[in-house]
Image (cartoon, rainbow over all chains, first blue to last red; front, side):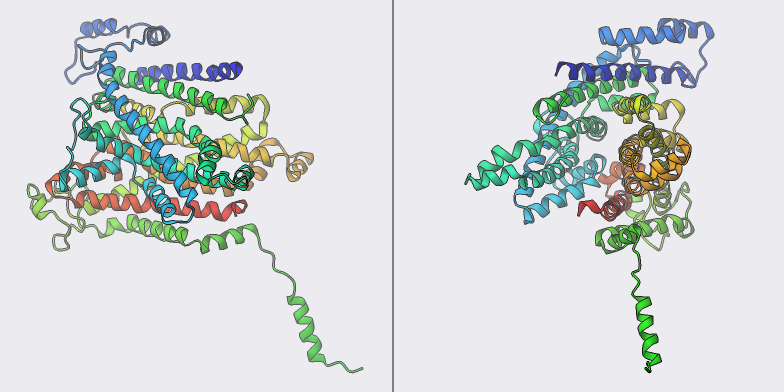
Length: 307
Length: 308
C-alpha cells in the first residue's frame, strides 16, 4: 500500500510542476505584456512596472520564483488588473462559494445517481428502468449550460418560484437551481454506470448463492450486491470532479453566484494572466489530489487490485 | 443409358449455386447497423443537419452581420420568426437574421467537432499504435506522458491558450486538437497490445517488414472498427467543449458565431419574450448531439459483436 501511494505521488508531483511551468511559459509567450494598454506607457514607467512584478529577470528565474512562491507559501502573486488585490484574496473570496454548491451538487449527484441506478437494475425492464435509461440518455445532451437557461426559464420566468441568480450567503432558494444544473449530467452518468454494473453483479454466482440460501431480497441487494456494484462509480468520481469544477464556471457566470468561475471568466476577458494562472493551478492541484485520493480509496476497497 | 440432358444441366447448375457466399465481418456489421432503429434515425437526423448547414447560406435572405433597421429596438414585437420579413427564425437582439446565424453557427460547431475528432483519430491512433507496438520503456514513457496530460484541467488550459494567443477558429482547432487525442491513444494502445502477438504480425515481421510499415499496413487497418466508434462518440464531446467555451463568450469572435454563443445570447434575452432566440439554436444543438450519440452507440453495437 505504501509503495502504491509513493508511486502515485511520483506521478502527481511532476504533473503539478508541469502545469505550473506550462502556464507560466504560456503567459510569458503572450504577445503584448500584461501592461500593454491603449495609451502607450513611457518606457521608464514600463521598466519600473516590470521590475515591480519581477518580469525583468530571466525566464528561468521568474519560473523558479513563481514555483517556490506557489508551492511553499501558496502565494499566487498580485493581480495584474486589480492593483489592490492579490490572486489569493480573489480565490479566498470566490472559492468557499464554489466549494459550497459544488459539494452539495456532488453529494446529490452521487446519492441520486446510485439510487436511480440500483433501482433501475433491481426492477430491470420495468417503467422505473425505462425512466432511468431515459433520463441518462436525455441528460447526455443537456449539459449545464443548457440546463441553466431552461431552469431559469421554467422556475423564474414562468413559475416565478425561485430567484434567477445571486447568492445571499447561500440561502436555499439560491442554491436549488445551481445544484440541479450542475448535478444533472453527473447524476445521469452515475445512474448509467451503477445500473450496468448492478445488472452484472446481480447475475454473479455469489448473488445466486445468497438467494438460494433464502436471504430476503433487500438483504441480498444491500449486503451482497451493492458493494461490488458501486466500485466502478468510485473510479468515475475522479473525472466527475474535474468536469464539475469546469461546470462551476458556467454556474457562476449564469447564476451570478460569485464563485471562482466568475473571476476566471472575467480574468480571461480582461487578460488578467496571474488570476487565470492562479485559478488554473488551484483547480489542477485539487484535481490531482482528488484523483490520488480516489485511486487510494479504490485500491483500499477493491480486494482484486494488487499494487 | 439415356440421360435426360436438361435434367442433368439443371442439377449441375444447382450444384454450382450451392457454393456458399462468404460474409465479411463488415457486411455483418452493416446489416446490424441498418437494423438498429435508433442509429438509423440518428443518421437521418445528422444528414438533415448537414444538408441544413450546406444549403442554408443559399436560402438565407440576409447575411450574418446585416442589421435589419426596421426591426431593431422592437425585436420582441417585430423580430419573431416569419416568412413575410424573410427572417425564417426571427432575428437576434441586434436585429440580425437568426436563420443565417444558426446556419453559420451550425457550420462552425460541426467543423470543430469533426476536425477535433479527425485530429484525435490521426494523432491518437498513431501515438497509441506506436506506444503499444514498441512496448517496454518507450511505451511506459509515452503513456506516463498521456497520464500527466490527462490530469491537467484542460478546459482551463484551453481558455488560457485562447486568451493568450487570440480567439480565432484556428486556435480553437489547435486547442481542442491538443486534448482530444489522449483518450483515443489509450484505447488504441490497448487494442494494439492484443493485436501485436497475433500470427499475421509475426509473419510480417518474419518476412522482414519494418516496424513502422507493420504499424501502418497491418495494425492500423485492424483498429479501424474501434477507432470509428470512438471517433463518432468524440464528435459530440468536441461540440460540447466548443459550445461550453463559446457560451462563456471566449470562443469564436463576432460576427462569427457557434451554437454555444447563440444559446448564450438566447438565454441572455429570454426574459424579453424573445424565446425563439434560445429555441432554434438549442433545437439544432440537441438533435445533433442525439444523432451523434445514437450513431456512435449503433456503430459500437454493430462493430463489437462480443457484446451480444
